[in-house]
Amino acid sequence: MKKVLAPLAIALMASVSSSFAADCANPVTTITEGKLTVAAYDYPPFTAVSSDGKISGIDPDIIEKAAKENCLEVVPLVMDPAATIQAVVAGKADVAIGSWNRTEKRSKVLGISAPTYLDPMGMFSKDGVDTVEALIGKNVGTVQGYLWVPELQTLLGGKLKLYPTAVALAQDLEAGRIDVGVDAYNYGVYVQKTSGGYKGIAIKLAQPDDRVQASITPPQAGLLYTKGNDSLGKALDASVAKQHDAIVEALEKVGFDKKVGDVGEPRLTK
Image (cartoon, rainbow, N blue to C red; front, side, top):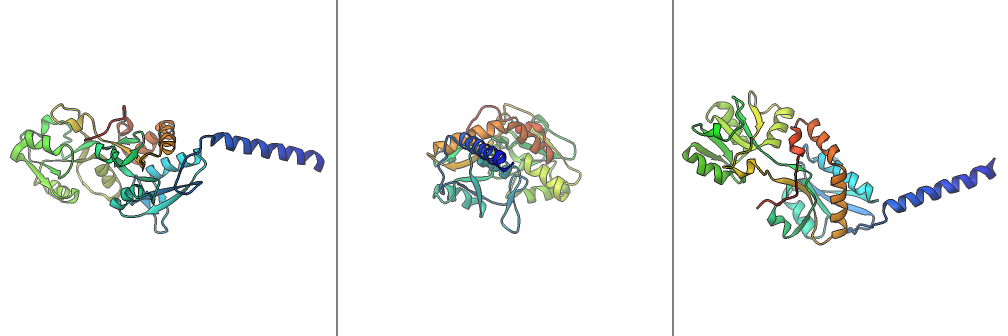
């Protein structure tokens, strides 16, 4: 019996080894051979960091699958948000995750994967407002720095109030000091679902309107990687494409509209 099993076992092992090698026929260059160093920060549901430094969430799931497909072991490198990008630029990490938008400015110093999901404009109100037209004549608030701010300022003038943070905006909205808040849809939905924020507030995706371009072409998120590392870029792009349906399911699971996964053709935001 031993003489029969031994050759069979050897054949099976050879088959597995051959399959493994075939799956990783196109080696991916990384800082440490066989490992994918991933810079991450705590930004659930996209990236959640546990007390022991482990990462989970939508982005870690994407990167874990991409690493497995390329025979790489993920090594998390947890840090502050701003430091994650710098870690990749400085060559301390291969990839940065955490819902980073695909922008022209970042593309100058980083590689950016194919789009993973959208970071759309949301409308927050007690009345369920979801159109730009409905904002006219109302007291509207938004957070400084978003792409839609200049166009809303032109459209609404003195009726638009700028806030330094989403928390400050939410406080005025719940107190009735403004009628509508314009903020990041993903952020609002997650806060409302997990921590009870935005009580009595309907959070809607903004309907497309030519007067506010961010409502038509919202920013796309992507995985940031070392600029010039073509082998890693191609591997990430291929994996993101393969995972599209799973990403949409993950977005819906945490409460987002499935349209957040309808990324369209790759584009960079100015």
